[in-house]
Length: 151
Image (cartoon, rainbow, N blue to C red; front, top):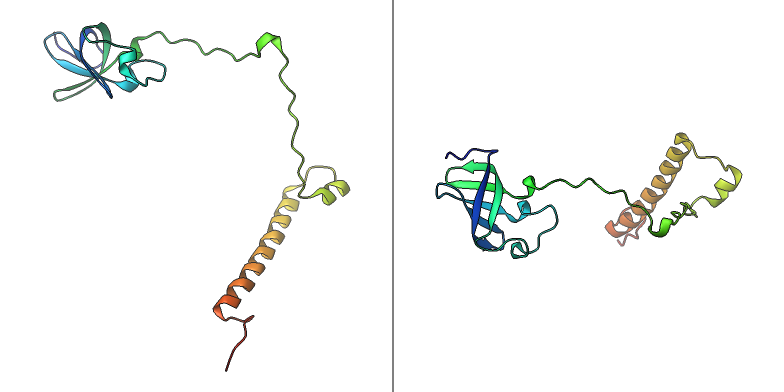
């Protein structure tokens, strides 16, 4: 029997490692089920899902020379995602936005949302102030305009 990518085969678990399980396929060939292809859930230890000499159905994912990549997970039925509902039919809490303290005065005078131009002008003003402060500090350290010169 030839082994091809996409075919579904039955094999026997011959060895278990920390990174997966080796499966003996028909014809005496051996393939590997990587730990990420064992189950749909997080697998910390392969031994929690498989034992040696277990008969398993696998799907052939890759064939690269003598290496055969297998999957058990892709043959399992996909469970439909369940909608998350609050327990005891409780009503979900209402979203309350956090209060911003940055522009309280400005918001009191203009309670509507700020336009793009307003936001841009505020950003430019703040940026210029920060650059000016930075220049003063670096010039004094370098011996620039703000420092004392000893002759």
